[in-house]
Amino acid sequence: MNVFCKTLLASALATATLASAHAADPLTVYGKLNITAQSNDVNGDSETRIQSNASRFGVKGAFELSSSLEVFYTIEYEVDTGDDDKENFKARNQFVGLRGGFGSIAVGRNDTMLKQSQGKIDLFNDMSGDIKKLFKGENRLAQTATYVTPSFSGVKFGVTYVASADSAQLEQDGYSLAAMYGDKGLKKSPIYASIAYDSDVKGYQVARATVQGKIAGFKLGAMYQQEEKVYAYDNNVVNPFDGDSYTGYLLSASYTIDAIVLKTQYQDMENKGDSWSVGADYKLGKPTKLIAFYTNRSYENIENDDKFLGLGIEHKF
Image 1: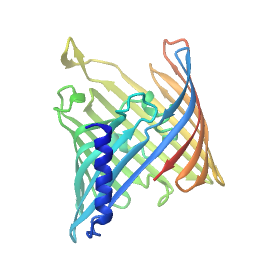
Image 2: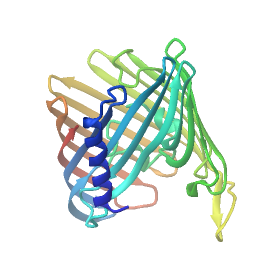
Image 3: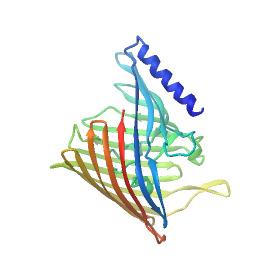
Image 4: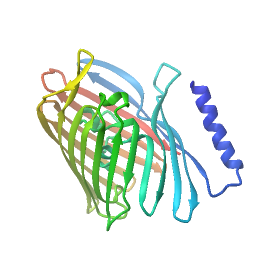
């Protein structure tokens, strides 16, 4: 489906919603534009870019089937405004599910539970300092089924099943498990903590522990990760991979002064490299902020560090 058709479809859905008498089934059109002017120095080669950072457009909604059961759905696309190709849509989360007193279950394209378990600890998410540059496990896969339990005194459990037919799965069924405590946004609780585990997801086993909390105006976070490659292609045949297990960690901190959020982050992964970032956000209004950041990332056995300096704007709608 080309860009015009996708845009036309989304517009038609939004128009139909506004005209609909079914107030119980509102369709929300949402998204964000995050665009930065950047100086990127990668492996010794420098360039300037007007870069889109996971800008997106989506529709979501829910419908009450009964007093105890609701259907919910999301269709979301990434929009790369900096891509020379006008066919600049990329699929993000796209799923449908049911929720009620039993919790929720969703099927379709979705983030795994391990990816979801990070909460908001990654202060440079979607930017050049995103944790996915050094950590495995930041997976959004096409053929998934995810179940999340109700909250038990602030604790939720979740599991994602990834079908072997998913092209990223190297012909293996995969599972992603997580236990989470508290509120990811730290608005309803002063602390968020999780533990998560991937089994045979995109050829890796990953264990992750995350904690983030609020203390006297600061938000402090820490993550520990262990990862091991267990499957790989060998002459176009999938075989078990007897690789070493590597460990890494991440530390992040932010401090709010009126409309300004100062933030910093450090990440290290054994036998791969390390990264540090500093930045500041200036809130112009509830949906809009200015962004400034610098990221330095070094890799093992590569002489030159990668450096990213950016200034931009984000607007959510």
